[in-house]
Image (tube, rainbow, N blue to C red):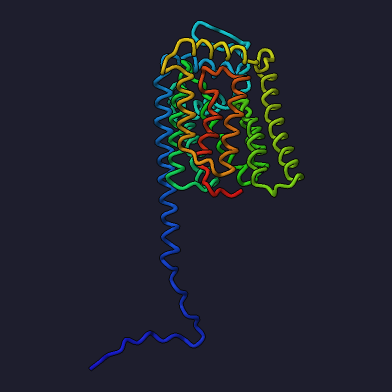
Length: 350
């Protein structure tokens, strides 16, 4: 005898049950979340490693660094070893000192040094997480490519620790440059402007967001002359307002207003001195090695990738004019742009 399995009867006015979502639609979403979680785990791990390197390589000068955090907020002289100076143009760099002071008050059971260690770790983790997310979600880089670009940036950041004293603005410099690229890619003008103004309290290089905005948004526009003019004006406004904020902070907080120094003559002398005494581990050799490392991993067939390469060269030129190039930390903006050049897909949307 044969038996048939009957389906349960439905009321005449009942709608049929909705079909289950196809597995092919569910699996990519789950894979995307897992990939994103893995990328964030990598970024947080790299942030820990980079913070460890920074804190251990320069532990002997931490007392000076902690002193200088208070000096920025109090308008007092900076101290580096036996040298005490108040004629340095760093009195706008209040973001890290303010966060450090707030964290010390929020954690009264922790010492100043412990709060400093915690904030350094968190700031580097935020930097690499922001960079990785912009590579993956903003530029549309593949998982492996975004991971490679983030790892290369971490290597370059560690190499920038060749100066005996920590400059706590370096991690937030990475944060704002990464987020600035994300704002430009998505054409979020108010986000870009807000980032540039807020992070002017960290470092003058926040004004670079205007250059990033102009380069990225022009390349993704309709190519008309009016669009070019609009993007250039927007980028100029971002740079001017950011740099103006930095100048205002220096004027208000510094013992005297000290503008940024022009350093080409000093830099050329230091470059000549370094090249005159060849050393495979000196700073010019390391700088050249890092640039070659990024370029070797980049696929520059995408126009946007070439624009990031152009921005890297522009920022290196500005470092020659206003920074001390034997301190590789002044090339962090260049390294971030080279990292984005590595992460830009060949068929990036223009």
